[in-house]
Amino acid sequence: MKTPSETGPYADFIAALDTVRSQPLWDRYHRITTRQPLSATPAHLWPWSVMEPLVARAVSEVAMSDAERRVLLFSRPEAGESVATLRTISGGLQTLLPGEVAHAHRHTLAALRFVMQGNGAVTNVNGERCLMNEGDLVLTPSWTWHAHTHPGKGRMVWFDGLDLPLSHHFDSMFFEMGAAGLPNVEPPLVRAPAASSPDATLASDSFEPGIGSTGIGPSRFRYSADRAFAALARSSPAPDGSRLLRYVDGHSGGAVLPTLDCYLMGLEESLPTHRRRTTASAICVVADGEGASVIGDKTIPWKRNDVFTLPHWQWASHTATTRRATLFFMSDRELIAGTGYLREEEENHQVEASS
Figure (cartoon, rainbow, N blue to C red):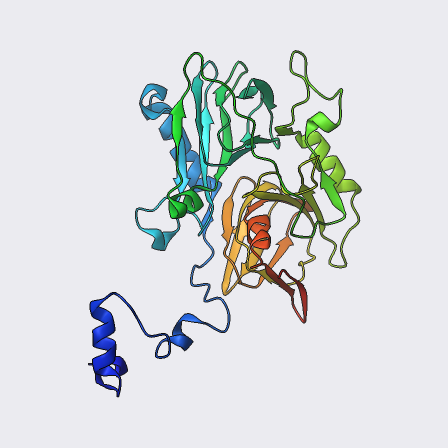
């Protein structure tokens, strides 16, 4: 069946435009200027009960010499072979055994690690040693050297978060393996926040001297779990009982990285959060407790170490079914706000629109 462009009064003209790779706006205006985001990506869950046996297989079957980084990436069902978890951000599970080393490299990707299981590993970022314990957040900004070692005991598993799809979209990927004589490059500066912050924020450990472990001082790239969970507990609850903490750059007050924005949310048992939607996307790691989230038309039950997505512009509400639950979110919120594309709504009223 022919389209209106092929049969209408401008058919010959449109055919001529096609020969020079040009298109008319007027006959497709309403198709490309949608009234609101289409948000066709459904929320997806990767249960720890399913992923943990695969992590165990990766440990037993995949040698570090073959893998460089032993990571299981999360790929949304409709993405095919793409490594994108959502449109601008990717996530995965990385594991390291005692005595293993993931050698230094750097890339233009911005990345972070949220520790899900284990204690005692160390990430070295541009020469700064960052201890990795359960619940810690460790940053590896764009073009910083980073290597992982595990002098402790027991298996380590952490959530790897990256802006990989964004880098692929811009075709801006550079990568380099560590070698003697290659200098450090300071990470890009983080701007003052374009997106609003909750009342509770947390700067890196370097802004609270004296909290480092033996032989490892406080780092600008590490946000310790003890400090984060204590700050969350001290924060004021919202009307729905939830508490929200934003991890921030200590100098600018902005997001931890220019393209990655992180939050910790505490939930009270049986109190659903108000329904909200945003043009930002997020990946959630269940840091503690159990519950369920209603995202769009899907209900996602979750437990500790489960990972699920919050696609953009879908109504979402979270409810704890244990006494308390804590969710870690990595999002592109600050990136979207910086472009002027951020719009956020709570049911029955608009929260924020950047311009």
